[in-house]
Image 1 (cartoon, rainbow, N blue to C red):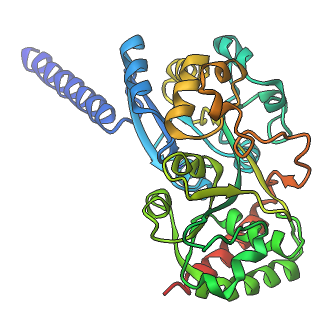
Image 2 (cartoon, protein in one colour; image 1 turned 180 degrees about the vertical axis):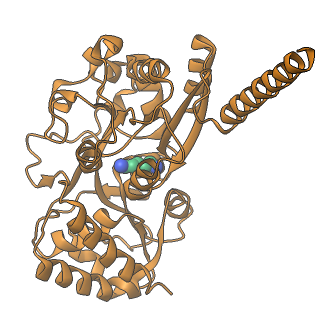
Length: 357
Ligand code: N2P
């Protein structure tokens, strides 16, 4: 009997030790420890001081990981190996994630700061009634160009990029929708076009751009343009805002044929472990002072109406980055074109990318 009790005790202790170790391991990896909030965001997209402030105020530790495209983020969340409490997809990706049942409905009673968001950024078609997502940043896709390096030339159209004088002078953001969208817009097509003939025509047009393309890059695009390693960059507006403020020769334009208007929103993936912490983090980022601090730090445009008054006037009034959306009819939001069509966009973009020198 004694041996039996000892046996049981040993099994009990071993099981307990195993549970404890797994728990510690999970916490260390940031996957689901109950003292952690794991956040999956775009690179260069938060003021780290806000993470520290959140940790101090709540006692939760933030485990922070970054991605550089909606496609990479969705693949990681869908695959489920790593779990996240908060993620920040864009419009069409949110619609796709809802469709694929990857998101949890939000508890609005835990997000009182949602009232600070400008109404025009709420209830958008990719997520009616903001059931699954709340606004983080918004912006456009456009062209940064260096007036000095272009000898006074200005850029107004996507088609200006095909100018033979720009040989090896263009940096492109590494995004399938952005690069395909630019080619489609340059041809007068919608950046949500699903006609395969049009998409192939856009791809052929991109191939003709290759001699002018110096590189297709991620967040380092800002440094390269700021250091004048290239005269032109196709970028997200906030990246432009950040570097323009430091270099007078740089300007940003949304080409006249049209471009993309995008919205990045915070969501809670279905696999989240700390749902309470996730709501607390989202609500913290919706606080007007935090939203303003974040916008000033990263350079992107905040959808938080109450935050605008905490921003320097020259930022909040800059129409290049806070365009009048009623007048900007030529801007289109990416639509969720469905799994197969999105895969086709990716495939054409990858074929284009593979030809890089
Ligand atoms: C920040 C990336 C912004 C993403 N580095 C635009 N959707």
